[in-house]
Length: 296
Length: 158
Ligand code: FES
Ligand code: FES
Image 1 (cartoon, rainbow over the protein chains, first blue to last red):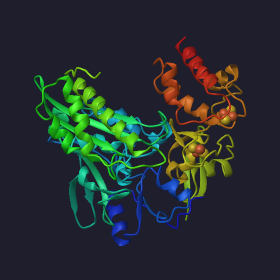
Image 2 (image 1 turned 45 degrees about the vertical axis):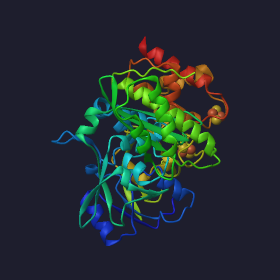
Image 3 (image 1 turned 90 degrees about the horizontal axis):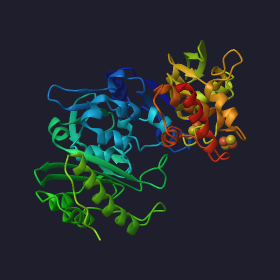
């Protein structure tokens, strides 16, 4: 039995917000794949819950009138992966989510939970970052929207006030239409493992030049990050063999990896440079271009 | 913090009076008597507790029992019909994919979901391994398990 001390069930968003307004100490639980493990291990701070597992309005994926993709944060990973809109317009997100856990975990865990956990290794984060995704946060008194990039505050910490609930993840039409991406997860095992480094790239090609590069990393800093130096180094450059090397060199000033039992800092830096090259090359390919490889 | 849940367990409607703090695994083992559901790690790592909920595999150790309310739950007990093993169970027997057996019910359910999901779609050994990536076995070395699943997919195609 899990050491839950307080449990309220919500079936609508409004009900969840009202419960959380009344008692801001309640923590939402959706898929449970992180919170129930923490409870099982006796970690304090997770014992008072508002259950949003069955709030239907929090799950599902749709295109809104502007062509933005709106993902319900309660949608489980496997539903996001199999969704036609995602397969057509944002396959890189499906690629990223397919690297999480194993089949069972992907049937339970939700994309919103993956973000709200705020861990640097969240596989959904780099893919959402390169498509300029936003999160919509609702409380009993109001609603605000911010870039996923601004949502992460520190390891395990997100910009979510007590009483606030993540109610939508939105990928703007312009971003998913013009950019093509790729995600690579480097981990010790191919399944049931968290990323040692995760890297997403998205590009827009203009003729034989790279119109725009967006590059994001997980586990390369205390929070998932975009890489402004690498992006600037690539913008408008010809699609030649030198491009990947420029990006791999510039990215080192964007990242701040740390030493841990999982991997040493120097090793992470090596992987970061290499994943930047590979993700860029694949993203260019997905955009219909080709990046020659002329490394020795 | 008690609640009554109504589930369809292996095809039969059942009601259970549960504590909201209980995992589905606990209710299945302690109240429903479906003891094929094993606890290995208890934290979603090993897949020994795998059951199908609305035909999708989940780790019942990190799934609250109350979430199963109104849903269909399948365990290996229900796969055997009229004294006949299911194709997946039969293939496990024939290939000797069982040693100590603690992981077997979880593997059988994960494999069942995998073979039922897209009938007729060919799955190579790599795809089978990915489909079973949420299950750990400490005995067999996996080769016989993958072969068993391969075999029942081939049979389906015949
Ligand atoms: S006991 Fe549930 S995954 Fe190990
Ligand atoms: S047969 Fe012993 S753990 Fe798999």
